[in-house]
Image (cartoon, rainbow, N blue to C red; front, side, top):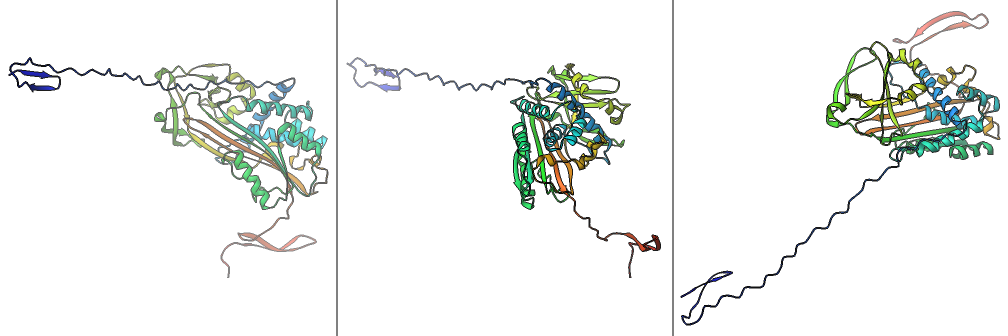
Length: 433
């Protein structure tokens, strides 16, 4: 018996006189090699980079004047600061609001306001053209950052708006202009507009404490952008922060150590005997976050008078590596309720509350109308970037007779009218029978 080897194993042959037959091997089917298709490469979108704003003619000079005005505003806001508040002002939002507002003032008051802003040598039309160019340029400056600027005017439906004023707002500021009854529905509409324009960072500007009843002229600015180089969240930790009153508080501090990490990241940096200044870029570097830190033997009050528009211009001339960058992760919400006082302090001849806005309307304004102004701001900074918003309102308010409610301790008495002789004087505020 022969043993037959098969490709599939062992088998036997039953006949001695037959030649053993080997199995016919099956024809092998060649294995098809399938090469996986390459996944399509997703290319990162290329950015056009920062787009410088092109100011024409005297617009650069106007810009320089307004940059000076911005620092004067902040100096005065800091000087009038009370308590322990972290103040936050948006000069840009206020300047745009004032740029719209000046178009409705009678000529003498218009010139006084422009003087306050440092623009007494420029016409209203030149100022309008500057804001149109500046805003359009800012909106196109960085496609990788979100910047939104919106303007609006609500006016009481009893008034007739001046056509030239309305056209100036539309042509130069793209302002929404709307008649309104100035009842609760108008207040709700204004606040809804603020919320929409600031992505809900500022949801209420007007209320019973700041309630326009003739007109409300508003500007809103919203900004959001990511750092060019983000902070590592793992490195954020609670570290001591020396507060203005001399006490320490632990707050979250974001940290970078470029030399140790060999990232070779560069920053704008300037130092002198009074302060250190640093600027961190967002994405395309069209926008920067900056900070100015007094030297250890100085305070903010010491250095603030020395900070001008030229300080930031000089800061941008110096760029290099730093061994460490440690900055707070923080949020600030602030209301500039004393805005009228801040503006008036820059020009004692202005009297902002009593500016004549009759140029905005063809019908007489209420004789008891006063001008008021308010700004609300919000700012957030974290490892990814920053988000900020501001709404500035300039409004017309008619006088409301004051009220009195004797619901807390008071002094009282009896007097004779012709001589003002106090016949009795008392204090009421403790237990009564």
